[in-house]
Image 1: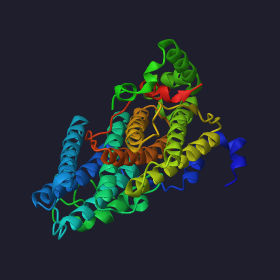
Image 2: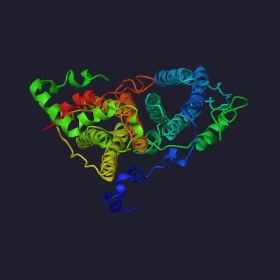
Image 3: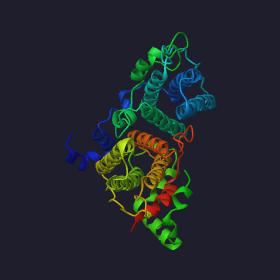
Image 4: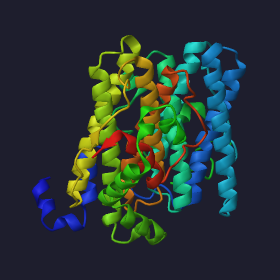
Length: 209
Length: 211
C-alpha cells in the first residue's frame, strides 16, 4: 500500500489500519464477532485464569522448585488467583454469570522442574496473546484498563519464566518488539489439551461460536 | 514505582523548582497535555471521529518516552559495562525501544500528525559508570514506561491504536520484569499493572530531558 495515498485524503478514514499494517501485526479482533459482549470476553479470560491458577496450585504443591524459582512461581500463582477473583467480581458486577472452573488435565507437566517451567512458559505466553486478541472486543473502558493491567502482568510472568529456563533472550524471554495477538479459536486450540471433561472451555459460556 | 525512586538519591535533585516548572510547561505544551486531558474528559465519546488530536497527542507522548529509553540503552550498551547473560538480555531491549520509536513515528505520520523530535537527554552523573546504577535506572524507566502506557488506556479513542499500544506495553512489562530480576528486585510487584497519568509520568521523566 502506497503511503503517499494516505497523505492525501484517505488518511481521514483508515490511517490507523495502515499504522498497524506497518507493525506487521495480525489483530485478531479485526476478524469479526468472536465475542458478543464484555461478559463473554471476561468469561473467556476467566476460563484461562482458572486454568492457570489450578496449574500453579498443582505445580507448586509438587515441590519441584526451590529458592528464588519457588518464590517466583508462588507469586505467579497468587497473581492468577487474584485474576480469577477480580474477573469473577467484575462479571457479577455487570450482571453476568461467571463460568465454572474448567476440568483440567496437565498430563506429565509436573514430572520435573523443566517440564513444569516449560508448560508455565507456554501458558503465560498464551495468556498474553489471548488478552491482546480479545482486547478489541471490550467495550467498557474501565474493564479494558483492568484487562490491560492483567495482560501486562502475564507478560512479566512469561518473560521471567523464559529466563528461568535460560531460553534465548529474543524468541524465548521476549517475543519481539511487539506482542502478537491470537484469536479465540487459536487460543482454544492451544488450551484444549489441558482441558478435560464437563465444564471445559468448549462446553462453557466462554465459547459461543 | 513511585516518582520518589526517580528523584531520591539521584543527582537530578539539584534542579531548581522554577527550572523544573518551566520545563514541565514547555513539554506539556509540546505533548499537548491540555488537549489530551480535554479529550479524556469527554469520557464515553470514544467512537467519535476515531483519531482526533487526542490520540496523536498520546502517541507523541509515547514517542518521547520511547526516544528517551532508546537513547538510554544506546548509551548504556556503548558504555560496555555489561557482559554475559545480562548483556544478552539487555541488547534486545535496546533494539525493541528503537523499533517502538520507528513504529510510533510511522503511525503518527500515517494519522496525519507530526511526530515530535527526539528530546535532548541528560542523566545523573555515573548513570553509565557501573552496571548497578545503569540497571537501577533502567528499572525506573521500564516501570515508568509500563505505567505510562496503562495510564492512557482509557484516553485512547481509536481501538486499533489501543491494540497497537497494548502490544508495545506488554513488551515493556517483559523488560521491567527481567530488569527487576537482574537487580534482585521484584519482577511481579502487583497482580495488575500500575498506571500513571501523563502529568505524573512527565514529572518523573523530566529530570532526564534537557532543553
